[in-house]
Image (tube, rainbow, N blue to C red; front, side, top):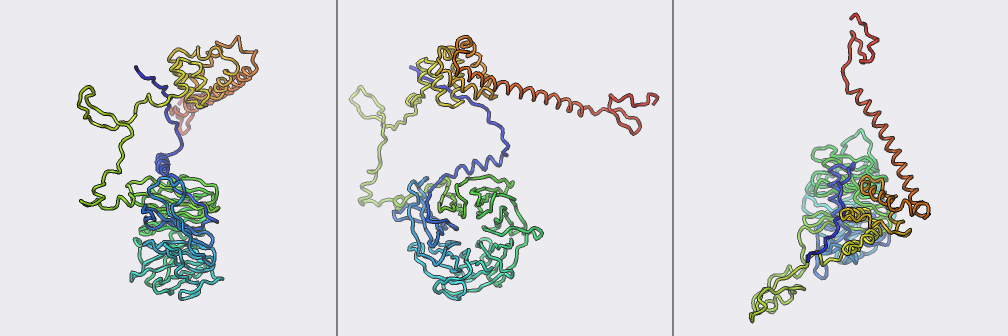
Length: 575
């Protein structure tokens, strides 16, 4: 017995859009990012940063840690790598000791064991990532580690660096236009430098691939400065001196490129070539707050307009990745060969992370162990934890004494085992009127058109529309009044409307008020559509006349005079 064949939904060619091919490819790429883990902090998070690499949780599963500054604490959260969606939020959450003032400008050391941050009183802290305790504090005016104190210029940004002696150095920038380099091992100040204009320095960037001796700083005067460890001096990177840039809010650096955001603009500089690589004017409706460079040709930026935007360095395409309910204050983007993820923090303290699927399976603690050795208990018990398929089929002779067969797992892929839709069940029972009613109840025009097309193929459209009362006619007329003028649906719906008028022109018109109101709406809709078509035809006629006039280049010449062929009265017949 053959199985019932479902109704195939109607398909049309995709509508043409104004999006370019690059925009479509970017939208397809960012659609792979799905929400990973979310958390809400007590207050707004002004800075967040991913750890340099994944680590192990207490149960042995791999996690990726995220550090966030919130009020007087630094929160360290772990996102599980093996879970595509963390339903319970972050796997582990640890809060550091309290700072003296509101903390900001967090950064990880390259080994992931230490954190650094500043506060609004000018103190710089180093913290242990395992215990969360504060190891050392460096006040703004002191030359050595000391007790934190109030009253200094805010330390807006911190960054870890490596000096020429391969020692870990900590750089911090302040609102008074100064930069301090701290020797974490010795616990003292290595050197300090200040800008001549004393403009606040809000952001720092460092990359060993670019230069192990250089730190870049973004200032509120719109310039980017390069501080060198070797000569303990700085210089301004004037890529375009004629243009006055907005205050630099955030910068991000890799081996060659430097991304910066200021005002509503986003810029990318080529440090090797010494020029501006790309500029996106008015990338955000409000002030841009953070920018991040990826491993490929993409740049992410966030702003107070509650949007995350992606910018392409190939053709300067800019699209909106996602929108939030609150302004976005911070952004951190982690790119690896196995996973790509980014985290954003909103003004209300909500942390949202999105990630791509794993390209390489990360295993848990059990699978990282070596295979069991012979003669051990684990070797003897191997395979006992494997489970059999839920359903099996035994292939072999059933009428003989030989009961040995081949056991094969089976999967139910038969389409008949799936439940039929209500309109398919009605069509299977040849109840055409009920099938049309079930399709109209879905309020999906594609399904309704597919059922009508199937009824037309079965020559049952008239029987499906006949013998209907006022209640069953109202959904049909409402659907016709909504979609009758749609160019994709019009050919079939016009036929349905004509069949309806043939059936109910003498029985329902003038007797049922609901039907009269629906038909009056359809009549008004058709009249508006006809008038619009007449106007378009008139416009088309005028345009064709103008096109035909300018496509006839032949003209008659009389010395230096050029006239149209109809102006022969202006010519001298003797010449």
